Image (tube, rainbow, N blue to C red; front, side, top):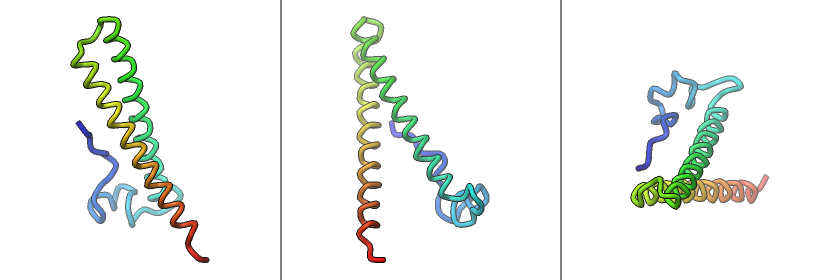
Length: 102
């Protein structure tokens, strides 16, 4: 059910030659890739929510089976819970950094 994020690779592995990780340099270094990964995850979450909504509407109209509706809604719920967990971790990290003494 949960698909792997293809852009994330082990530290020090083949990523060192692909622009991700400690060997990355330049303006599109590791920070740009992390931003891209977050954008891709957010985009896939929105897609899952839209798919769940459209499948639910199709199920109400009789176009989809109950199993398809439940599966799509559960995938959308899982994607939303993952997005909320990531958001909470980002906020927690920001708050911890803002509490650091300069």
